Length: 394
Image 1: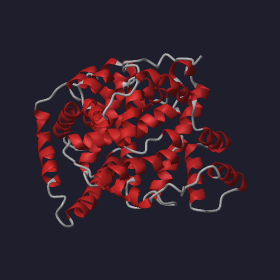
Image 2: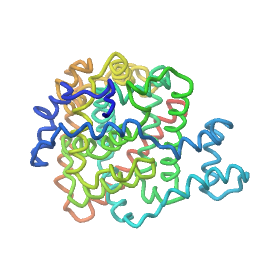
Image 3: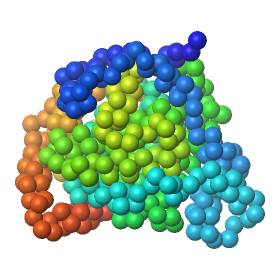
């Protein structure tokens, strides 16, 4: 008989609302049916599966030299720079299990998916912050590793800086070709996950029977869906109208990224319909957010107030209000109330950006306009990346 952990709960009331009255209702209409929730117990074993290959690298190297030096060795190995025989053996053993150019990979589709990620510019980052990231705090279990690694004490600005850095670097043109920086960032992130898991399991009172293994395969899939399907839903809500080719490219992009991150290939969705099913099963078996996730949501809400940019306190307060508006616009009132996010009047200035986005989408068929938006959007995201680094001391 399958052990059913505490974290596994049918019909999470928060996410049930999403699927019955929120934007999930449109997803189910697109899918054409409601997935059979009674079969969801078959996914429980994924809570106890994890990236053993990455953990072995951490145990063999990173635990001895520290994360910074271990990561530098990883980059040297990818760049084919000289490293000690022992360290080279560690990475040889790791990479012999990874085909960085699998038969199913289509670089053209990767390019199209990355271009879709860049062309909305700032709007992409708004969706990631105020929909994907904030919405993820409605689940208690997936966020427990953040608490155990001290992410709350380190502050939301640090996590946002890391997320923006990851996103911008992996969505640049040809970013995922080795040894380009995007490819390195993905493998480095994989090591971060393993380093966190090894240390949580070895140095804290983490209860795997209750929460599953930290950063397990099921939760890693959910994170992957956050960057693909949930991101796509948010873009549509903001007025972006991706083509079928762009949608196909987006899911192919995150199939490859997920594969490089160590997610089992067989559970990564190939398309939107498969992703909708996976998101339904994951969300509808989650416990609601708890005091830890509410604290994370509050920290993200107040991040603009404690940031160092803009320099004027009044402008930082305005930024918080604008993000609160986007939270309401993207997540809906029910979820925002669950997360303790207040409504705002001043933040309605954000509708100007939404109006601008919708107006630009109407011009996509003009010759050269889409390419122009990809270039300008990528530059806009890169500028935000630089701002985060400058003002958060990275």
